[in-house]
Length: 337
Image 1 (cartoon, rainbow, N blue to C red):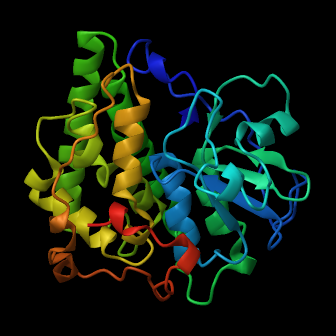
Image 2: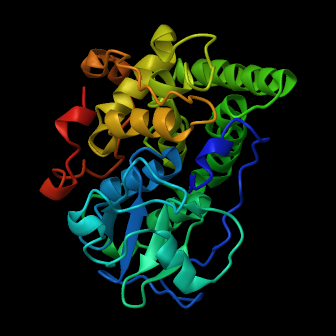
Image 3: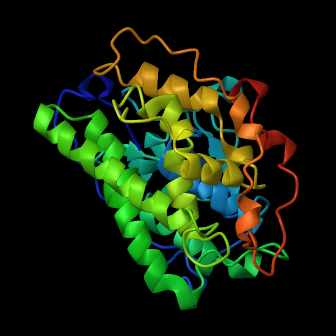
């Protein structure tokens, strides 16, 4: 999710930018960035679904000590994501006020906006990658030497073709579909995105009616990518983005599925509903010019029993749940049900 140009949201045709910086951090360091504990810093916004994927993956794999975390203010300005949640309005590790400073050290006058997730090389202060589609796959497959004991296999080789196919449909119609609907500048454009979104959600509900997870009997990257959109659905996409055929709470299968994941360690403990709502309603001034943030929806239902365990499945496969959230990374009470 990019920062900058807040008044333009909803006033110009929406097009998802491709990541411009696509270097990979790999076990063999073939792009010049070898996996190394403590060398890199992951910059996220808890408001952003694309960044939230990396938060979930990092927690499930137990990479908290190996890959440090910077959390940006959910309200960015036209200079990009800012570190106003930290003392002195600077990231304590990188020493910068805006994420754009790490981008500028990598390339001056780069095309596109300043987006999260971003991984920054701490010694040089330079951006390494903002490739939101690749970052989590590499955390799962290239960072294995630094995974915790009992870390799940989020991208198992035997299932990758099916996972990739499911993720492609989810990306096109759901992850990106809510944005195409919400930022549409014409009725036909909005209606097409809306129709594709709800058709895909209905197909996903059919798939999940008889199986606990999207692919196989364990949590995979596909579930992470669907979760980060679904967890925001009623809070922002239903109203703010006009994706209002029904609320997620009105779909029996998807509501149970997303609650199951939310209650799984590594998922809900990364979600900050306060950041989510304030970002969408206050930053997208082209859509919500008053900046008023709705008080609802009621979040109490997130803790209700989901009964998805009756379908079987092993959340972490042969592994184990992640440990407690590090104290410094706990979501404040204002962002939890």
